[in-house]
Image (cartoon, rainbow, N blue to C red; front, side, top):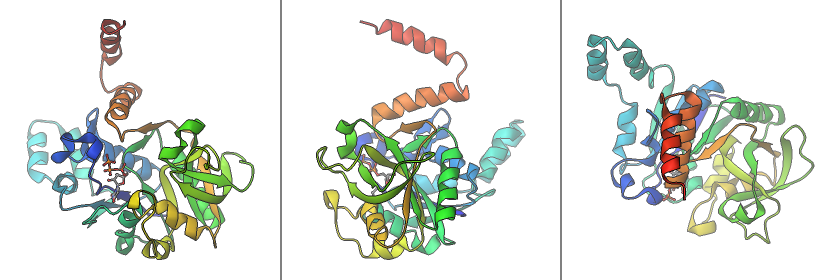
Length: 288
Ligand code: UTP
């Protein structure tokens, strides 16, 4: 498994007005753009080719992956070789391809736009607005795909009242060691119709025949071409498994989720000296 597809052509309406100019995937968590944290996780799981599904409306995303020899030279002149090396490594230690989704017709359609760039029998899809605390989970998902020769979705148990915002799975059996065979899945069900409280999170390992199902998609929930519907169709004739996450997951898709993630990730990485005591002062000031 070599290829990671990152759908990043959405409009980011929940982050307007910021996303009018800055793609939400480039918003910094500490000093690192969110999309880089998602790429680092996949590199840790053995990926070496990243396919970004961008759009003409988000040129900054492509600029982030383009070489900047002028900036690297300047940094070296100033003695900051570590940062120069870091900038040089973007797209050098791993390959990056960019494809465009001209009209954001949905996640299934976005993944379909990457079909010409994916190598091998299976590939990873990571949503850039979900950040995981390490690569172990993705590594386990890739292993399950290899062992079952079928697609694998990332799962998380949530409170039943929250299921309607997500894709939800119907397990075919008991979960063993965090792995479960899946019988069916449904996108954004009502609480009463939800087959379980196991939601699909933004990590997928998909066998390449998913592209045939994507090509056959018709608009689903919200009028969008849904990836969940393509996986559901694929599951009619091939095994599908879910792996429950055992690492932390931060949902950065909303401004408040993003802020909470930025603070916790900075604390975890020790990025900001004294951040903890500064936060304590701030929280004290706002205690009722
Ligand atoms: P989201 O729905 O969370 O992102 O899609 P969005 O559409 O950018 O944000 P809002 O809802 O308007 O605030 C999850 C991921 O899938 C990508 C998005 O860029 C995001 O990374 N996506 C979604 C696409 O690339 N194309 C689409 O048609 C839809």
